Image (cartoon, rainbow, N blue to C red):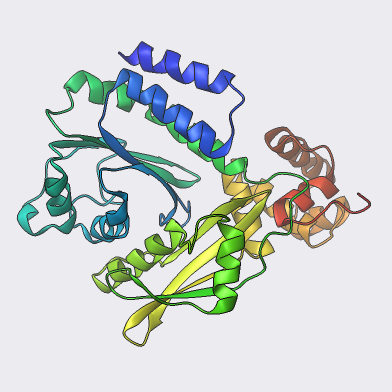
Length: 336
């Protein structure tokens, strides 16, 4: 079974799909080897671990906000505290009062295989694979475990694909949504609705799923979780947005704005697997320093700076410093 899943993932990696299309292809490859009835694959902000871009196939999509809320408030089935890299749903000591367990029971779910995709650069995603009849067998869990490191690398590479040349301007923002504690939208402004229409065209009155995730994380913080209610999400065309949740009167205010250059650089270096020193080199380049100035600032030889740049160019596929900085901070290459 391990080889069947590896061969299926080989096919995905040889393909040309990108972004969400590739995520769908990865899930299809996993499903052929380890069948499941429904799923939720949530791309997370690697620094905070908060959901940024969920891809889900669940029995009742209209209950998705409630499902997200219950997952964040679960005491025994949260991806940050689950065993790595794969665990199956075994409930917990107080499972009858766990909101996520109760919701799954209403769907007739009998087992969940949870995969946490995390490496030394960050927490990139988690996936819950649901079965509504029977349990995951030991050999199936073994196949998922054997492929977890590869799936993690593929998830990180998907993030790196979000930094592309020729980025469009994207919506300006900021936008603000007011939600209640059940994650029901209470208020928006005309400016916010215009922003969301540009963010998710043709979707009526859209609410990005990431907004529900950061709001749910704020509720989790009130219950003792320490992670910030913040996530960065790729919009497309190289544009990244940052969503943050904060208390507002008796509700939750979710702010959506363009990701700052500093935050983009931090995410860029994680996504491309930079070493700590390579990250420092990029920080120096981003403020306009040349090789000599970078070497002086980092107390290293100029030849060492050049070696770091060779490695950075290899990891990112860019060929010049100007293109590297432009891609990282989200600005056009000068002179183009």
